[in-house]
Length: 107
Image (cartoon, rainbow, N blue to C red; front, side, top):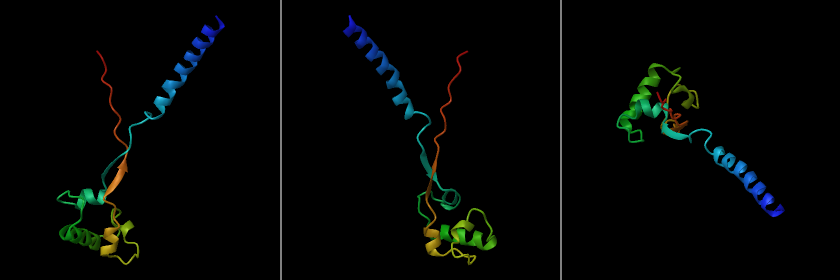
């Protein structure tokens, strides 16, 4: 009888632990990637690469507004221009949280 009681107690303890281990990975949706804000605005053909025309558009916009909050962080030498190296350092993607799944309400 003691063995059965210990076995039942052990199974109950395990059943309490198992759901909590699975829940750890499901707190929120896994992060995913999206085009960075610069690429979303300037990568006209959405190929993930800034071609010469797109780089020219970046340079033109930055020359018109050197305090542009989107582009200013990439002017690392603060000369008011974006060099090829500075443009190459612009990340193509950013990490974003996946949208939470909406649960349907039953009527």
